[in-house]
Image 1 (cartoon, rainbow, N blue to C red):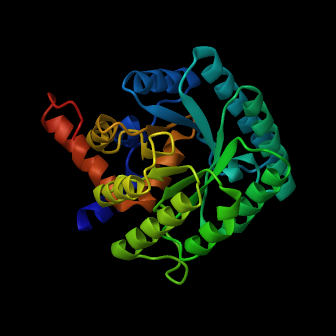
Image 2 (image 1 turned 90 degrees about the horizontal axis):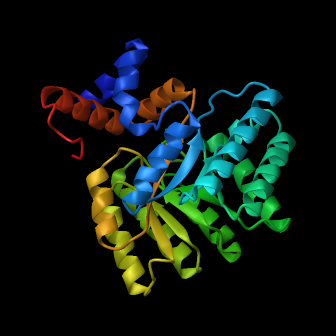
Length: 308
């Protein structure tokens, strides 16, 4: 833990090339061809993907439209190359932090573009200040007839069980994760056992409601719990999937695939790799420590294949 926190404190002072080296396994690259090549390789390994266009600190309406166009390019390439991938998008990248109506307009446009191409859009969940608005967007667009999209729920938030129960009648397609954002203790579980308990209970409710769930975790205990719950309910491989981040614990991902489960890998790319890397690593020191340790190990042992 102390090592992880030390790495996090040093990140802003590190030269950009060093941060780039540390994060290179976890970001596909700067450009769309980098992402599609990564997805192609994942598909050949029997894995699915979700592509995310990195966009941080959107400050004006023009930038939101540029992000929306970038996602249209991604969806077009997925269709053209017959890739097994959908897309994930952050509401703030589409303007949620600027204007709710602007975000809704951009998201509606993106859903329509994806629907014509038979594809799916995942609305990412960001920090707790956006939770209500993101859920409102989901409910509104579902009421308008859009079905080709899903949401994310974070088990570390104390409100999540209530959100799961409220949403269950809609049978949402949900990515369930622990949650990477650090929130106030009054609204977030900090103890690992409490987070796991919330995760498993949320998963039980979602499965029992007939929801399709992306079980997003790198936690062995939660993988085993999800397998047990699916077995008890006689769910097939088409009823749920596991999801993981690109480059994080690939050996666990290979085990999941070997057990005949679907596995979807989150594939981020774009010009904002530096901002994404700092935010992601600062908000989850354990991943920062894992990445740094792994990187040092590969430098000291060049023959390693990076699959630890």
